[in-house]
Every structure is written in structure tokens, then in C-alpha cells.
Amino acid sequence: MTRAGAWPATPEALPAPIVDNHCHLEYPAGDEPRTVEDRLAEAAAAGVTRVVQIGCDLDSARWTADAVARFPSMLGGVALHPNDAAVLAAAGEYDAAFAEVAGLARGERIRVVGETGLDFFRTGPEGRDAQVAAFRDHIALAKELGKPLQIHDRDAHAEVIDVLDRDGAPEVTVFHCFSGDAAMARLAAHRGWYLSFAGTVTFKNAHQLRAAAAVTPLSHVLVETDAPFLTPHPRRGAPNAPAQAALTARELSRVLEVDLAELCTTVWNTSHDLYGPW
Ligand SMILES: [Zn+2]
Image 1 (cartoon, rainbow, N blue to C red):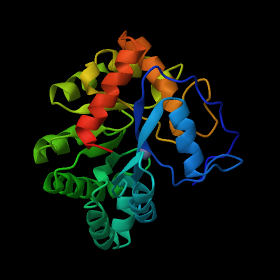
Image 2 (image 1 turned 45 degrees about the vertical axis):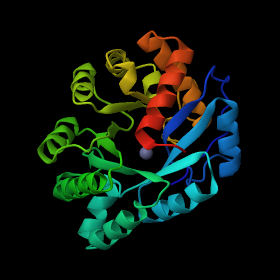
Image 3 (image 1 turned 90 degrees about the vertical axis):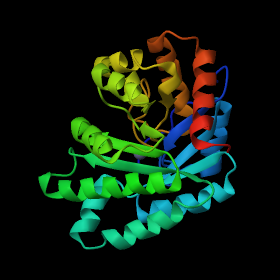
């Protein structure tokens, strides 16, 4: 999968650094592909000085394990994405793939098990049992390793919460690209879970998501790009890169009615509390 289009301008620098809590830098993106070094340098110039790189299929997980050893500003997460888990299970290839991911997850600079969860948008009913089984495997792995879990939840809010409650969520549980409403945000924060907001919170029609952000305690807010996808407003349609997390941080500061520097510092500290030192 690639993301075509001209690269958007680098956002104005933030007053204090933040972490891009979730990105996929292995994807080639842009009409003129930029190296990972270029994208990390651009991010640093915008105040996004550290990233969590997520590899959620076998090739991407291997890429991530290699990249975190080369880039000091990058920590990683590995998993089998719920949509891939369903396909792998149908092909009888899930167990071997999960075993390899579980091995990579032990790496010292792999600090996240994710993204895992449920996706009822892209996977139909025939794949749901396989997704639930894979989600439970990843929950168990995160608990075994004592590492944070990053959740992908697309059109499956109630079912994701149900699995977490039944199995017991890992000590650190993060909803990547949170997409629930205010009631779900309250429920998640009440359970001690973290909500990572992507560029979607800047979209013009995202009133419900901004209402969710507004009721989330600042202590449980994270910022991410999900680059190269979900480019924030007003650069929707262009390929996304970690630098653009600055736009999302500015929008969250407005929505949460907190000073931008305070938001950045809090997100920075929370990211380090969850994932450990870079
Ligand atoms: Zn992602």
C-alpha cells in the first residue's frame, strides 16, 4: 500500500516537543519518496522529536525490529493487524506468523504489542472469530512481556471493550486513533486506558470525536499521526508524516482548552511513562 501525492508543508514548530505515538514509516509515500531520515528530521523541526513505529504484518514487524536499532528517536511496536490476522487464519498461517511476532516483541526497543483489536469495517462476519482469537493472543502477549498494548478498533467499540473486560486489559492499554464518542472516552479513561488522537480529530465533520477529546483527562491523552494515513486538516489528501502531529496537538490544545506548551509537555511525559526511555 502506498500513499501518493505531494508532501504537505512542515507545520510551524511546537513550543515543546511531543511524541508521535503511532506511525508506519515503512510505507513508501509521496510522489517523491522521502527517506525515513528525512521524515524524522522534518518531524524534529516541527517539535515531534520521537516516534513509535508500528509494524503490524510480518514484513513490517521485521522492518520495525531493524529500524528501531538504527534510529535513536524511534521505538517500535509489532503485531498482526486484525484484518491480516483473519486472512492468515483462513490460510492456516496464523500460528506461525504470531509466533514470529511474539519473538520480535521481545526486543529491547520494541515497547508495544500492537496494533491489534477488532475491525468490523474491513473484515466481515466470517473473520470475526479469528480476529477475537488474535486479539486475545496479543492481550496475553502484552501481559506476559509487561509491555503496553495498542488497540485498533474500527466499528467494534462494544466488542473490543467486552474482550478487554473478559480477559483483563494489560496494565497499559492505548486506543490508537481513538474513534469513540464522549461516553466511550469517559469509560476508557475510567478504566485507566489511554486515548491516542490522530488527524481525524481535526476533520471538519468530527464533532463527536472532538466531544470525546474534550472529556478525556489530559493525563490520558496521546497524539499520533498513523502516517502515511489520516493526514490532518487542512492537508487531507496529502501523504501524512510524523511532523503533521503538530497540527493535531494544536487542535487538541484548543479542544481541551489547555495551553499548547502544557499539552505538549504532558503528552511527552505520558509517552515516556508508558513506553520507557527512548
Ligand atoms: Zn496504524
